[in-house]
Length: 216
Figure 1 (cartoon, rainbow, N blue to C red):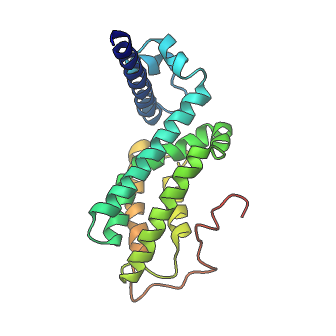
Figure 2 (spheres, one colour):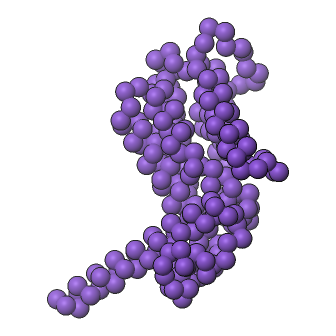
Figure 3 (spheres, rainbow, N blue to C red):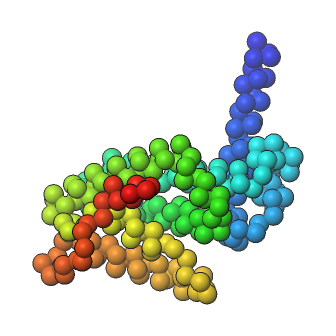
């Protein structure tokens, strides 16, 4: 019995160490960018460098773990918004506001670590989470349009690409202005998606989730 308990304790410790390292890496990447030394991640996580390398033998493995952790968080935010908000439009706006930090970090990671990010797009877990998120957003978009709250000449692909464009970094823009601009642009984006009597027609066809599938 003692050996079994010890084994459970070790597994729990290993899981906690892994979670601490991922959380520390997320914070440091968000604060300081891609060049944070690995030993600094270990210090922030309160683990030894050896422990970090046992869990994450190279930087690519750590980046993948940080990205997937962020995707799990984004899906959880979308699910909670859909479950708790009284209507689809409020759920969509809540999702966009609450998921911003995670989505922004994901966007920056895709820029900083392009080759690793390209490999991540083929990861089965990443693909699974992406499908779940797009299905939730698609339900919310269709419900918001049926309620008369969202313009009907847009689709879920339009929303996803707008968010991605909004969160993409602008070279040379200092942090405070970048944040202020993102806040204002977010509200402009949401206002442009609302159904108004004076909505201007959009060019081309609506962008759907099918259009976002690889190779389409």
